[in-house]
Image (cartoon, rainbow, N blue to C red; front, side):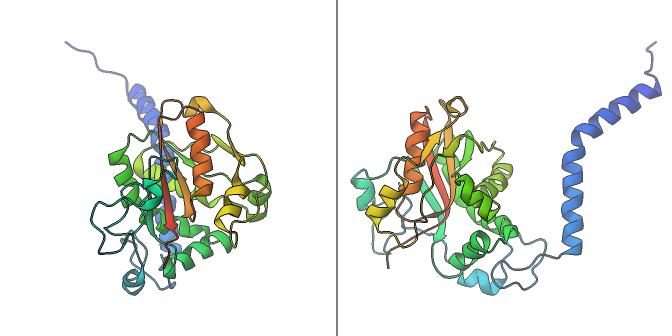
Length: 267
């Protein structure tokens, strides 16, 4: 005849299980409460949208939102002319211009997407990290299917710019992506060791000189023999991410893929 466990043992076990699950339960409850108090609004125009809509763009704004579609360069993700054969590698990648293994962006850096990024990055609307991270999920999943991604690493800000802005936009995006992809985010692997002027308005050669030697890998053990997904908001000439990739590979990263919300496209 078996013996039954005393009631206090079941209560104790239940309490330990609850403690382990409490953070995620409380997080979900707080999210639901915030949605009740502050119903979600369109990231583009601010009109109310359904809480069930994962993209958080109203139908009108979604219709005007440009996203990268085929054909595009299979290496760097540059959108190509509809007449280009698919696949077709762009000139920069044929010439071996970049150090990364592959790059993708959600959309071209123009129109509505550019406006949303500017509100997020320069006007402090950090809640826009959520819809922007949702836009990043499809290209992020594609990169994870093509590469063995172990960790996410955001492009770092210089401590002075971080103090002025109050947040690192790449870190906010990486945090949400890491949760969706079930991958850890390593915030301190890369460090910006010197101040750089904003890249806006600089020529390609000036951009390259501006960020040369600006980054260093502070903890090589975290990325050694790992597949890394480097996250940033905008890919312009690729100089910033390429300097980061250089340091990550010096630190022993097996491969590095780059993911950005937008990238500039020559008209």
